[in-house]
Image 1 (cartoon, rainbow, N blue to C red):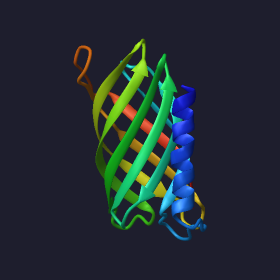
Image 2: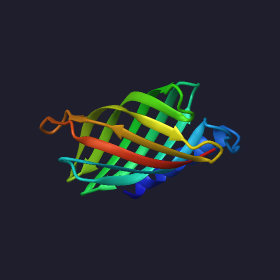
Image 3: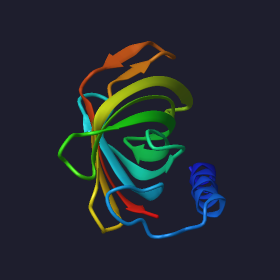
Image 4: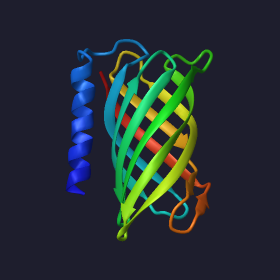
Length: 157
């Protein structure tokens, strides 16, 4: 777990040094770091850290490091965002990411599509997110879990 925390810290710091940090104004942002919780049926509740970077206006990458129920989950994702009409700061998103779940003496590969909402509070450097993220475990006995959801709060820069 210590190696996972070190990896996450290095990735977060790289976000900070790649781009010059500047407070985001209005209802958009380029980078954000913060907390995330995931819950639902099966697989327990996971909580941890999230970092997000927009490569352009619509495409972002997110890296999560979550802990819970004897599992450490490391998951990079690619996401596509679109504006919700007449709702400043609110975007819909769809995406996909492979997840590595470390625990119980084994590592499992998860395939994780997602769909959700991403809201940047106008003129405040805070981003909120809610998403549906089903999972398909493809190793050590395949499994499908449709009832998984995530909530996040991040500081934007």
